[in-house]
Amino acid sequence: MSRRAKPSGITLSAADAALIKGMLRRGDRQHDIAAWFGVNGGRIAEIAVGDRFADVQEANPAELPPRGPYPKAAQALAAIESLTLVKSALAAAENTIRQLAQHR
Image 1 (cartoon, helix red, strand yellow):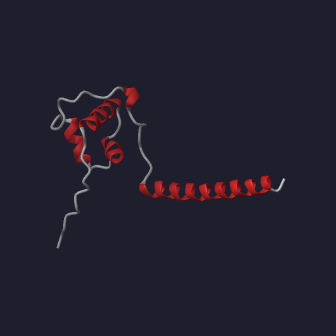
Image 2 (tube, helix red, strand yellow):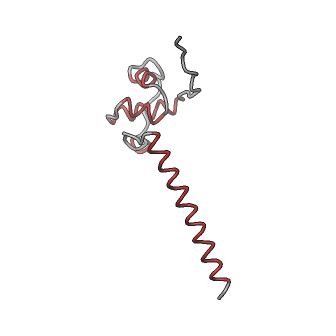
Image 3 (cartoon, one colour):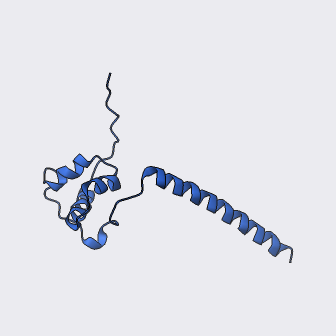
């Protein structure tokens, strides 16, 4: 028995389409663009061929996000976990410094 996954609820706006068009002109891969926006590659293809947002102008190159490929979700999660540990270590160090300063 096959079931479809629930829709993500992510929709692309005209502003997103402008960025997508700019990214396409820059030469970004549709797969990377889809990953940036969290959508299926088909949505990017629809914009690329003019089936959606045909009247939207591409964004200025200075407005575009960095070129992909982007980190995998597992890599992003590992980075968040590492940064959380660093944040805790910095807070502990700050508390130690404050305690030492109070005893002077």
